[in-house]
Image (cartoon, rainbow, N blue to C red):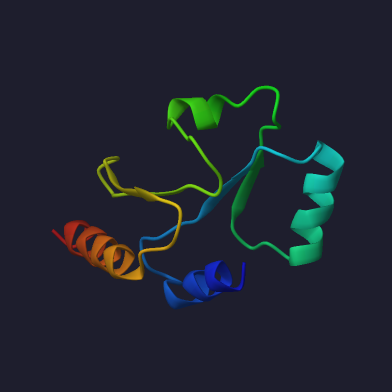
Amino acid sequence: MPHLRELVELYDGRPFAIVGVNSFDDEKTYREGVEEFGLTWISAYQGADAAPISEMYRVQGYPTMLMIDHTGKIRYRGHGMDDDTMALLVDEAEKASQR
């Protein structure tokens, strides 16, 4: 989570958002974790029994990182952070918003 926190700070004020989805813990444990780790980004709980978000994006393993550009297209899918791709996508979104 430290790297996610760094990204939130790095891209503050730019067209960038992190959305986390928890599919493992029970809801109480999830909520305690959000508070304990002081998440400042969007975090959703879907549980393990019903995983509509994971199904929609065809998540096969955890953690899975998706980078979705400003047009809604998935530009990266993997199990780690690709900081270069992320920087490129943020720059592209910023340029598109200035047109």
